Length: 120
Image: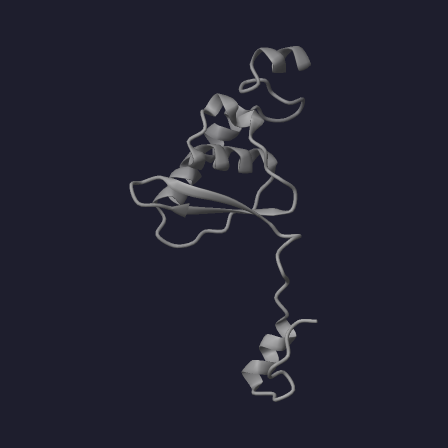
């Protein structure tokens, strides 16, 4: 496998699995739907599909998809910009503050105990 991978990483099939080219072909129609959407879309997937998505939306050449780094524990936010391009931001969820649902629920109920208190 490794010799095939070195020769052509885009078309080398993982044992019992897909090649990057197979994945690209499989998700192509989904990419086009995401690109044309006017509403937010949540995509949850494994690494290879995320590499393909980020490669596509950053304009990275497809033959570089296997080099696309996707950090662990991150959310990839893709925002359309004027002129038809996209801004891609990787947000590490381990460094983002957590949203405390109990404070939000208390405020909705009008609880005075929740007023003026932040997350400790």
